[in-house]
Length: 626
Image (cartoon, rainbow, N blue to C red):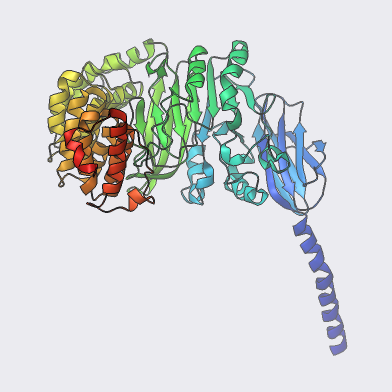
């Protein structure tokens, strides 16, 4: 019996020994990058995956729940499999199954609609920076509540797209949605070139873009026509749109590209990645206007910012294109004139996403981020884009008889529609007995941003509610009247006012006051060392737009003794602009490392440039020339 037991044990061990290589072999034959959806159309879809070892490229598929058909392809030399399924029925759920060794992926996808019905999709961007935050915040599950039909990614999926080993992290991050939904991507600069080093263009190998593919990929989905521009060919996009757009016949057009047309840039002492749409991106802005493109989405700058409807360099709520920068992160600069809303780095964290609905009579979108205080996902933007004025008028007519939740909803909708004629009707709600109504009305009036009602917003800066102070101040920053400038300047210097309200009021002076008054107020704020840091930062930020030659001496004096790094660097940046001598401005540069009272060498260079240009120095600058 002992011999039989020994013999049995040896057989088990031998079987295990022979089985181990088989298990290892199966693991080696599994998925390296799991199947993900690409180029879904009314009658087809493409699946792409990568295996660790050579194997068959087979997709079993059928109507929902069935796997009674097969589509095949051939792997490339990198074991990347690309299989196109054709002959499908539009707007129909199909099941599919893909095998690689012992790995099996089963999922479903839905083909594109056959009719011009409304469409809902999600926009994200620059997801390479998210680390594990997309997963840890359960942002994908939150986004799923909107039943999106596909995702648009504005690019920068990985740090270096020509480095193959970086791609699995991206596909793992989005696998749960990409196995069923198409994430169509406008190539960003971090994906790398599609022109150079094409052997290592892994973006192209792992993706299939619609239409004729890159650099200008186009597709229709329901009532909307989509155009995606790859980063290298952004300068060629206007000519492409001129040729292509006359043939587009959908209700709406969405343009997606990596680089923003309008952008306030990063928070920081320089104008890093700021784009006003009137320089390098002006040809694209002009093409967007020519072809009445409804919505432009971009990334690249790692912020969230949404502009007003903008056309021919000015606000146009009804006919202008709506521009969104969703760079996946939170770090926007102080607003510019085109900014409807930007993120708040003190209250928000990455990641972000925007859900967009292209409806029959409106476009609406909502943006979400991670709230620091809430430790949960919060809504940071809500906007409704309309063309037929009957839509906001109908909501406005509901206002007088509405109460409770219906009243709050009507007020919110009018604000989201940025419907300026509603401003007069919303003003009385700032004095409502219900704090929720007062706050909702304040937010709506800020979103509307009407210069006509600005004088009647000013008294509400005295509200005991900091939220209302902030919203009134921001509304004045968006739209004001030059006649209000002295009162706004007094309020900006009022130490009793909420800090963020004061920040917005300095912005109101920058945009809507005479430059002399805006500059004088900024200098007064900066000279008062008891002023909160954020207010002083905003004041130093404004100077580069408002200060003139007559202010150089005062700015030099402040620069020489400033102790706060941001303010000191921003003053240096302003002097670069005013004096014409561009010295490096950064926390790591000699200026950034300098100490108060020891900055004469930098000041001397600016003064020398002025003397060179003018031939003689004003008396108040001569002491700095020695």
